[in-house]
Image (tube, rainbow, N blue to C red; front, top):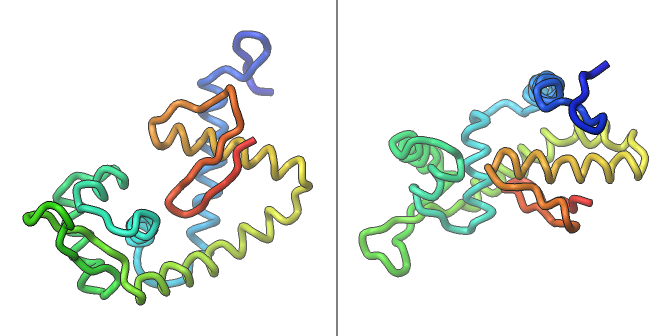
Length: 168
């Protein structure tokens, strides 16, 4: 049984421990399902660039929580692989944006399709109520990861680089 805090809700430390273990196990299972190819950091960066259309390297570093130098190296590797291209910034002549190439989009789409099949099969086993609960929990988890504050007052749609989910 999980220790409880005020008003019978799970204590934050106990909830953190249980969530962390579940996320580690889920992450391990998901990595096993990933198709061979570029690393997960490449896919995460590609998804971030794809959702934004074009993105400056500094914005990519911020979104991916990377140091600027690491984001530059990542952008170099993605460009060398033909997955992204650099484009002049439309208003800053010194600036450069990253844009996903058609090949990059194809690689990203294939990765999503193959990598998500296992999880989709598991989620299909849940009933509607359980899926709705999971969607709400995902909105909260995404807000925590993004250093945002969950909105407890109203239904929300949470946009994430790899998906869009209704959360409540």
